[in-house]
Image 1 (tube, helix red, strand yellow):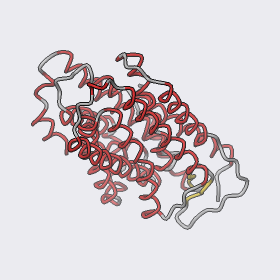
Image 2: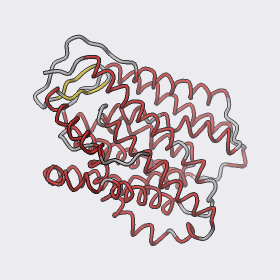
Image 3: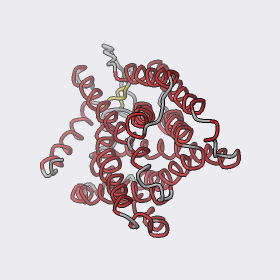
Length: 348
């Protein structure tokens, strides 16, 4: 069985929009962190993802309780996703600290779509589409140009990163990309198997937030040293992490993890533009070309593919051009659960 084509296209478009909005919010984190220069990367990461994750779990607690049997049945996937949530912010912010904001962001976010594709290939046996390959090539090229533009545009005296820390930072960026892809895949797997997005994201991020609490307690003293530092911590937890990942969870209900992580290549482009508009950095023509390529990547991935006939695999997936669609019977189950969950969801 298969969902009507129009419904599938609309669902994919809504999911892509949610992921793009989440990526735009994530793109503000680098600029926000500049307002708290005395706070270390571990504290920033633990506060943002840890507190944001716990808040997600608190808001989604009733749904988590209702879906407890489904979550227990998928506990290995849930724990794997929580481990990714616990590692990702520490690796990501440390990568930017050691290798520089541009290089750290590009390696972390740019490697995630490739890691996600490998995970889906190994775990789900999912083949990559030509549309995804074209979009990924455009997005990775664009983020690479952004990195090159910032590196060549920096003043000669500003190169403060030595080879050792830089290489360590790039390595941590790869770890961040892998763990980002890992928890994205885990959330998508839970959602695709009937767990509503609120419960899936709340459970994964709540457990990941608990893992980050010891790090926050050990490193978070500078966050309460001034009102500006505290304000940055609150903003990071509430807006990019809480609201951003609520949107990301909604998006994962309609698009595969590899597409979602590729759409998140909007993040470094947003970060670069904000650095120009807010921080006062200069972005040369090469950088704007990179932004244009990222926009091209997003256009390719969000353009609907209206194939008339699409086979349903043995796992219940309906595979179509740029996205993965649930079979009609499974979608009815998920829609019903989501509607029941939405009845008690507070407006945001």
